Image (cartoon, rainbow, N blue to C red; front, side):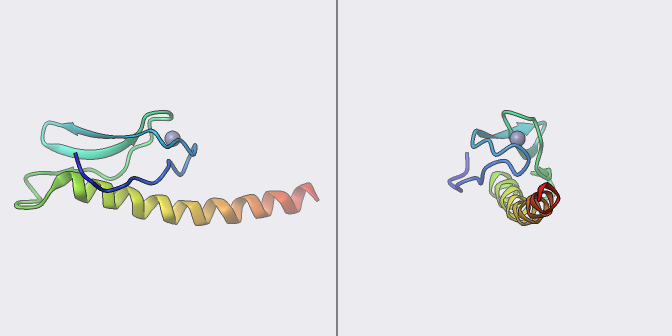
Length: 81
Ligand SMILES: [Zn+2]
């Protein structure tokens, strides 16, 4: 397991994020809604830590989507008046 702190799920806000490994493919997935981060195979990452890459990718996407979600809710608020 990686030592990287995973950001909450950008889709449901759940903080229970799991690291999965299936047949040499590492990825991070939300335990609540099941959304998955990008997959990294240990073969492609020779000498690298698949967990670490998967965790970083999850966090990158989480921050990007968090910004999008913030704008989205701003627009919703506008419509609500
Ligand atoms: Zn989720």
